[in-house]
Amino acid sequence: IVSVLKVALILLRLLKTLHGLIIFRSTNSIMVFVNYGGGGYWFFQHAPWNGLMVADLVMPWFVFIIGTSVVLAISSMQRRGVTRLQLLRKITWRTAVLMMLGFCFLNYSPRDGPLSWSWLRIPGVLQRLGFTYFVLSLLQTFWGQTEIPERAVSTSVKNSAHDICLYWPQWLVIIVLEMLWLCITLLMPVPDCPTGYLGAGGIGDGGRYPNCTGGAAGYIDRWMFGDNMYRYPTCKGLYRTVQPFDPEGVLGTINSVVMGFLGMQVSWIIYFSSVSTSAAVLSKCTRDEGFIPVNKNLWSLSYVLCMGSFSFLLLGVMYFIIDVKGWWGGQPFLYPGTNSILVYVGHSLLGFYFPFSWEMHFQESHWEPLLQNLWGTALWVLIAYLLYRKRFFLKI
Ligand SMILES: *[C@@H]1O[C@H](CO)[C@@H](O)[C@H](O)[C@H]1NC(C)=O
Figure: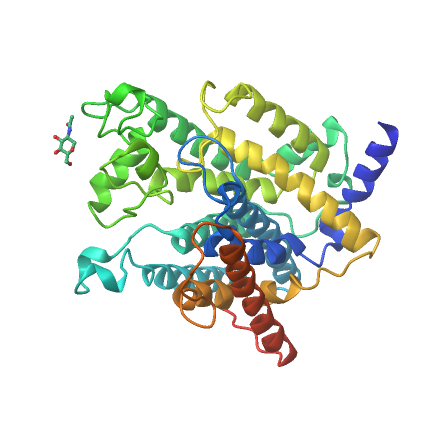
């Protein structure tokens, strides 16, 4: 235990010297790989409803590291004397660009017939990342510390309590947001559905609530966006649901902000232990039986806490390997990370065309999809490497 604590202590110097932001970078390549299909293996897919599979791990890591980056980037700009107004302009512009890019991802494929507005998907991954970035940046701009205090990188309960005092307006905002999520999710009446329903609907729960997919979260999105939301939710196959459901919906975005907020914290080990304990209690360490099951579709609180503890662990391990020990420089994941938006948009738009992809002939085995997905991912890493060599970085 003592040596674990020692290692942890080293890890805790985290924010002061962290310059690699390696998770951000490797997450990008993993995301490309799982989006390509992860070799067709079941564990690389998303869980149909409750539960965790590899594809469910990626986006929250990304959101977490957005939180970390926001603190590093904005506090350094504040130290250089950039004013709040200038910061606000920059933050708003970036958010707007991310959202506009997000709207380019439609529910559409050429097989669907003529293109029309009805294929527009209003919520989405980039929209959620953009909004999360926006809120976290505001928190940092108005209530963040410019100097990251030495004592904040410590293990004791007293110091992490001190953190909370130091950043109390941020905590207040986050607590209010989380209360809002809990109240709406658990207490809002939804017509023809049980209050606080967290299931997938369809033939789940004995087929009693076929149109209740996602409970309050699904209801709010359908009310706000109608059909302009995701139409192929992961529960559709297994639960035979008919309602559209968007895994990047409005309600879940609240918890995405909370996830990013965890990435802004420095008292690593206290948060790691409390966050993982709360996740265990909320989910009762089961898939379906907990108070609030771990669920990527809803971005449920237990999912956020569980992924938060993974993120603290991963960031700590990466920090130790890369920054403290210098055993590894983060290659080749470094490269896609320097052009993450380009790679993300690129693989989403071009991903299924030659040479990234080809028509498969051997349906019955995994080796061809695996080869193809690895190939597609490797090509994007290569493209990112070449751009890095040319010092071309798409910044927004
Ligand atoms: C569920 O919705 C579908 C179409 O949206 C409708 O046809 C069906 O009657 C609804 N079922 C129930 C039980 O309300």
